[in-house]
Image 1 (cartoon, rainbow, N blue to C red):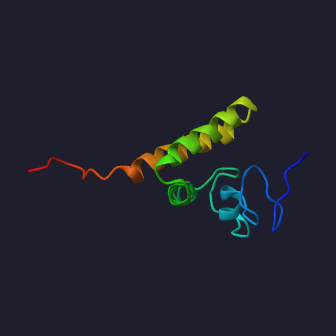
Image 2: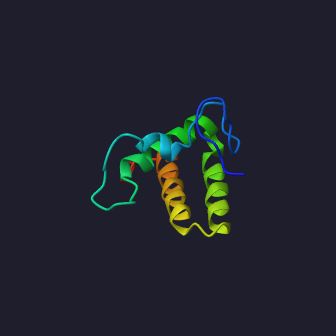
Image 3: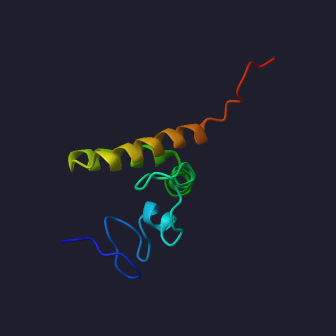
Length: 102
């Protein structure tokens, strides 16, 4: 059965009325990248921030689960996007200031 999107139709564990993160960030914005089909870096960071807000310390684990699901389904591009999101989550979680500490 194909997933249904929109209000009142929960899909894949999403809250009722929630849209998938990547779709919700890019709908209606037109072309945001010079490479068709490429997810802009700002959207990667937005998804990473949303994952942290929703899952807290478990955000990287939830993202890794999603990446693995996509890999198992043969969606290599989707897996690569979620690997980028995992990287961004790691950077957002890192509170160590750059450079040497005095």
